[in-house]
Length: 317
Image (cartoon, rainbow, N blue to C red; front, side, top):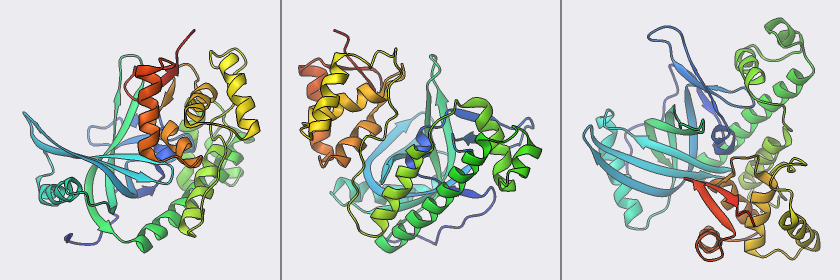
């Protein structure tokens, strides 16, 4: 497979970001001018107009609409799923997208790098779904992917450090500058701190450790990455206690992992599909087995429900 040229990073700077951080983002920011760029602001203060992402192709779909043909790809990095679209309005990318789709249909799996423009959709109930509109893309080898992992880990660490400084600083441009937050992160951090509640940055430090371990060719062993449930949340029930006991005993089935992940991570709107699959992978289960178990728990066992697309809750008993 041949792609036309190396990826160029220009115009609005393409931010290196892992799938987990971007997927958690719920703050779109649009400039006031007609031609001002739009951004997605993450919890760590990344202000993303364009991102440089990479991952193994996991799904491919060709679509036809009144606007024309489009393609959708899912790329999996070590933290989750990047959702990428090649829109009808980027016809110059369609030959490459068609070849990618054909290869995927034949069973080929390979690593891709994409420069994508942020896009988001807000549902009627306030949910935010993020993805990218591809501007450039190409297949890369494992060494290029390792380099991307290292660069993205470094960029994430930089944002984690800025977030930790922001927690104890005056919430202003002057306060952040005085705290030593890099100038290019000040604006995004101000927006982030005003929108998101406080959180433990460890959830993103785990992404960094996972990426560096993958880059070094090591296996990754991370326990529950979801925060503890709030005392009065629906997740703190007998099921949670039972599963926690099994976790402590080191005797968790695949179904137990899924139930535990939802119980620990549900803040009222459920836990998303990618987080469940990722946790199953951490416990040594394949993606296919995890998907089958989710279907079984939902359709057969009735222990979980998909109350909106891609988001799962424990079934109330």
